[in-house]
Amino acid sequence: MRVRWWKHAILTELLLLGVSCGWAQSKLLTVSLKPYGWISQHELSVQHPDPEREGWLTSGPPGGVAWRGVGEVALDAQGHVYVGLPIWASGAAPKSAVRGTGDKLRVLMLNARGKGEVERTMDFPTQSLERLDLRLAGDGALLPVGNDKLMRVGADGRPVAELALPDEEKKYEGWYLQSSTTGRTVRVRLNDQTSMLVDAQTLAVLKHCQEPSYRDDTGVMTDRMEFTTAEEGDQPHVTYVLERQEYCGKR
Image (tube, rainbow, N blue to C red; front, side):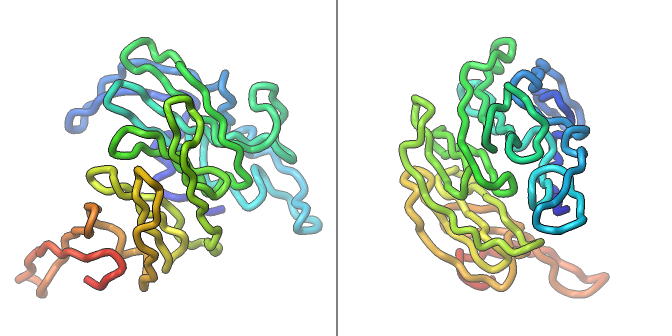
């Protein structure tokens, strides 16, 4: 079972909304996600036959489980918190009227300035619960990923633009999205060597990149290049330098 480190930010059935200062946090409100189809670890652990392997048992959706309850969280300047819930409702999924039928990314829009009221619920059907994402563009538009599509959502909660994301991920390879500091550019990591740079407003592909390794994507993204720190020299005479790398280029 593949577990991505950035998926472990929230591991409980409750979403705690807070503000941080240093190491301290102040809890503003608590919102239960159960009424919206949140799936518990106990439900994910129920074993069932694997149709692709005779005699094998598995738990959760086919292909493994890379998420726990809350999938993604995004916050806009108007005090709305967007929560992406991976909803497993197909096959051997525990039955629930709230979840309905068909796997989906369910996005909740909460009012953090109030009492955490859910102002809107949006469902985006998907064939894969492995490749999901939720973030905001620089202009505040919602950018969910589901069913191998990057979508830009309008004020009515419906996609106004879509970009197909090819399924080129191999087992244990990296798949994730990153945003630039302005939010105008999104990098989609398709596998260890392939990525796409996308304009967050138009969803136009700016560049296709073939790189030696995704492990170089550790710096801060701007709209033109990436910056990261590196060490030069040997102990005890080590110095730290700032490196820059244009996208699809070498450091």
